[in-house]
Length: 446
Image (cartoon, rainbow, N blue to C red):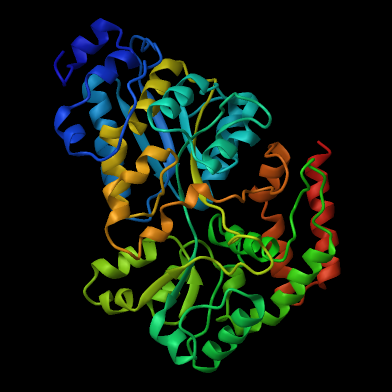
């Protein structure tokens, strides 16, 4: 069979994903180090006259969007199914997903973040057949992919993770060394002392405490997890109002004064801008910051002086980090569910996914084990730290089950706002923890 199928031919065939699998090009496959297993693809006959619309978060690195669009166009070329991909701001994706869910109209597919499918589970088409195929073909799904993709205590997949962005420490090596350290300390006391020295040197730290999808939630979660605190216990009981949380918030009261001013209003691009402007020397971020600095001759010296390091371990057994996960949802209102499943599968197949993950330069880390052999992970050593992002053992709602309620707590920035209220002296640690408990329990009673 030809490796390219015309629109007329595709529609005449009632093209299935099994046929799509047979159209994979040989040149890219021959050059790839990614190993695949030969397993049968789901038999999904694409509906006659199908067309698709996808909504997904805006790119932080331009190749993300460029290659994604190229891959979507290739799907149209091979199947005849038009696909419109809209990119929206990170702070807007949750709101637009809620509107789509409530109205029962809109995009066929929305790529939300992390636990979003668990919030809208009753409005979604199961993706178990596609997920099972991809898992068998590409060496299995990684820890966070399974956590966010499958219903709790079920084999049913309601989301299809495309990858995750890690948020390790990003820092200026020369400034940390000038403060007397070879690397950022891994304990709370050492981190606090370093941040105080950086502040006195006029190059402070800065971590988001605003309603930032990635950076705000990421910092609040690290603060809690590194002190042994958690939103839930293993059975799903709300335990945020604990002595561990109080200890974390008391530590924040000491740490926050070392930050650059204004971090309680930061969104997901604020620390990128502050670091690029050399206003701060330490933050946490995805690889997009380093990537943008490296490609601009004016800021390449900053990139050369930049290092990545796992977030301080504190009292945790491992570095308490998660990954902001791109998680695709297929809504029941779509008149073309088979076409949508075929598209998602196509985008995660090696011929499309490997060029996309490589082009992202490590910003999105792979969800399937086989993609650990992608070229991006054997290149720049400063990028390799992001390789195993989806193997991290922490998730939104840790230590409990992912559910509608835990997703809503995250989407409503309950933990971020608890931290911000203490940092700004609007509440005591005790009062802030009690308020977070009250807000969280409201969701879990529903």
